[in-house]
Structures are given as structure tokens and as C-alpha cells.
Image (cartoon, rainbow, N blue to C red):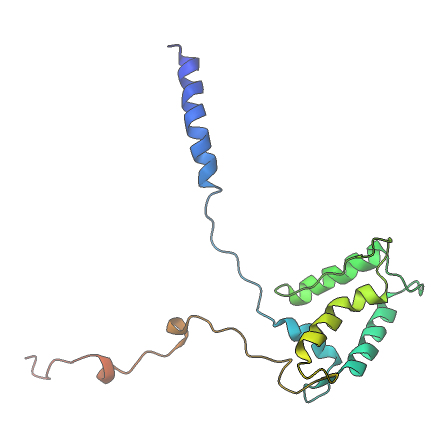
Amino acid sequence: MEIRSIVALALALLLPAACAAGPPKHARAQEAPWHPPTTMLLPYAAADGSLTRAQMEVGLRRDFAKADTQHNGCLDDNQVRAINTQRWKDDASTASPLIDFKNNGCVDFDEFAATPRSLFELLDRKGDGKIPPGVLKPLPPKTDQASTQAPASDDQHHHHAPPDGN
């Protein structure tokens, strides 16, 4: 068998195995800090953490007006990109991008407010237009307890040799 044929055969056999192995393993990238999804509603909440639908709507309208620099009730691609970039920087772990769901070339107020409104509805368990204090600021997920707990004291888990060494 000719050398070129042998090399081609070897590559044909080894290439699929190399591709199946995937890219080389690198050090794990730093994970984005955890933020609960409710973070998007916090700017509209009262000081005690409660939030009414009316408070949220006022805040959403204020934020939309600030983003709508052309004052036409429609956020164009550049405005949407700027908002999405900022959202990713602020809250990568739970960022919710703006999307032109109506596919009309802009994001209007209803599209801008869709995700916060949906989240509000989920959290308004009584259906009374209010989210009580404490709901918007849940505890972060539990981490590996073994690595975060202080070591147990020696006399609880270890037997020591008597002082004389016996």
C-alpha cells in the first residue's frame, strides 16, 4: 500500500474520533453572578420590597420613554441593541432581551413591557395586583455546602491519641 493511502486511511479513521471528543477542555469560565429573575422588577418596587401593578406600569412607561429617544413610541434596532447590551452587562444570568414579537420593525411599549408584566402575573398569587414584601428578593441558590461550611471541631469527629502517645 502506498504511503499516501495509508495516511489517508489513518486520517479517515482518526478524524471522526477526534471530532467526537470535542474541543479541548479549558479552565471553566467564571460564571455570571446569580440574580433572581425578579431582579427586573426591583427598580419599580417600594422601599419595603412590595410592588403594585400600577407602580410597575409607571416605572415601565418611564423607562420606555427614556429609551425612546426619537419619541415615536417605537424602539428601533439600535435602541433595542443598546438596551439588550445594557441588560446583559447588568444581569447576564437572567437577562431578558427585548424582541420585536410583532415583527413590525420596532419594539413598542407592549413588547417592552411583556416580560415584566408576565413575571408580575406569576408572582401576584392572589391576583390582587400586589406583590408582597419579600417575594422580589429571594435567597440565592444554595452553593456546595461542603466548601462553604467551617470545618467541624476536632473533638467532634476525630479521636486523638492520648498525650503520652499511646
